[in-house]
Length: 587
Image (cartoon, rainbow, N blue to C red; front, side, top):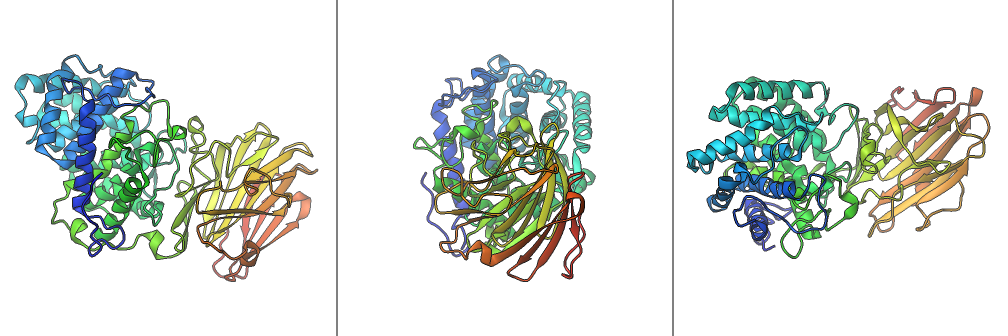
């Protein structure tokens, strides 16, 4: 992909300007064009993986998702090609929109693209083409979505159909129904769960916030935009911390193959004025992510985005993934809707959170702890509140980072009796430098986990309750990764001899008598070439308390101290008040 020369004057961190984004969008659109069918209604991109929706639906996905990219680019030549597809697609080539069918997803992209480019595309179509397209889209108004972010696809279609006066009453009902259904999933502080339960991931930003805020913005509904905009702004304060200094987003959750779609909420905040981020910080974060993927090989030799991350990666493929699925990455080009003179394009880049300082930041709603270090630009996520067992290992690991891929070998896990399951995750709280949760391994066996962090160092403590005496327990740490150092040192209950292919991936122990055994280790993932020894940075004291309870006292090299007690009877963990004035009580 040929891009303009770097501009380090206005973009000292990434070198990217609006011209780079335009060139990247143009290159992606040009690369998919050879894979269009002769009538341009379908885009059958190469690849061996066919989604569970089938080959025809995958072709529609190729059309719809690249059309959305063309809409953000607002290039009349490209949009003209997609106009050709509208002449035949809705008239019988495209599969019908039915209950919980993939075409419902793609209809939202088509409708949003048509709404954003109405003078350039929709208004220039023949009346018969407009009628067939509107009729095809209208099935989305009554099709039943899956109970998750899919609820917003009828909303998005309804917004466009209501604007053009096609079945306005049905559109109004679909909009109201969808917005009402997602309301119960908003849990505060800018966080939605993607359906019932505690499914926290990037869908919060590239779906839940994106479709609600864009709908309110395009509908010119100031009251609705104010409500959804406040939520977006609050979320962006957290979302900005999800990117490493190299631009890499955290690798947690499903659909990671959408890559720089993670930047969509950043642009959305700037587009609507609902953001706590300075314009230069917004562009630094978004351009950093785009550059990370382009420099890292996310685009193949044909100019296409394969299923994967930096390159093809089968471990990131879900059953719903087709060859064109990665083109939801086009959402990351939302910023091109902002004019060249907007300050998000003209202001000098400013440092991102990972550039500024070491930070350990608690996120109470998802019950996450973000840990970043300025020296290596890494961000680590300690997950003690998000769960979706359908997509293990995207949700069930204790930790994720911007530099490690969720592995199939059960990194960052507690394996009891050979069973690595982590279900029914119960948040037990988070605060300054700590986080805790309890999960079920299998009926009758639970693990209460506590993590404390400072700098790049972690203290990990796991209370195993309900296992038979002598049950083997394996505690694993960070996976090995090029250019990074991963350490896992035993403190209590674990063997001194490392276990695992790398010699550092796991430590083993056995449960004792009394029904509750505490295992404690020091962990670290760092890009520093010669870091100080872990035991020089933190000291840990484990004590036996009354009735089988366990005490944990931690003192960091900085002088900060914390004390916790694990309760054997119910697997709870409580923070004790210490002489440290910053210490706070926990659950």
